[in-house]
Amino acid sequence: MKVDITSPNPALESIFSNPNQLITLDANFLIPPDRSKYAKRAFDFSTFKRIWLDPIFKTFPNLAIHEAVYSEFCSTSVKDYVDKNINSVPPRLLVHRDSSLCPAERMLRELIEEKIYPLTSYDPTLDNREDRGEVKSLAYIAVKGLLYFAAHDSKAIQLIEKAKEWETGLDNVCVVKMYELIFYLYKNNVSDKKDLRMLYKYQYYLTRFEKETNPEWCQFIEAMEALYPGFNKV
Image (cartoon, rainbow, N blue to C red; front, side):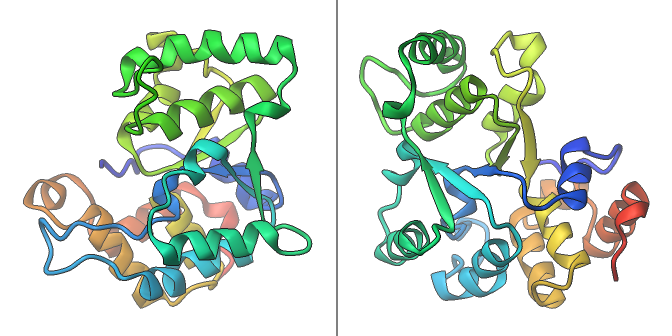
């Protein structure tokens, strides 16, 4: 995953100004990353919860997932955490359900899905799990006119960023990347900065290619502060 520090993301600027906006999350924002192929071990849930999940839910009061994403949670720890936030009063995590769409919205959703799925590994005829959550989430968001999709998956990000070129129908959807919210938590002192550095390095600065392509932590923070000078709260 490439870290883009060349230009500011208007979506992140908007969230800095108003963190109360609805943000729909992809599954990889809630499931601990496992890059044990390149590292000594995967992130355990308790560490991921402390560094990432708890600060995210503390910071953003209006988070959501699509029901197709919910079905991806296999770990008991993740599912219990998600259920707790869904069932809290008031709910701290909303669930987008396709059953809530009216007939006209369902037709539009199907049209958008038809544009998206050939660019992914999802096949509606098989209803396979791979990329299903991303396709269903993005189609729902586009139909409902929701703005923000938070993702770490490069394919989902491209579907949004190349919406016009690929004609995905996602022209009005904005993507917020994981490293951008790592920076947000850093600037707002919501999570331990050394822990955030560890998460950043695990996600973006682990392989030889990533070290040649992405900025190391101090360069990342310096570049992001230059991109978002009006939001330096520290």
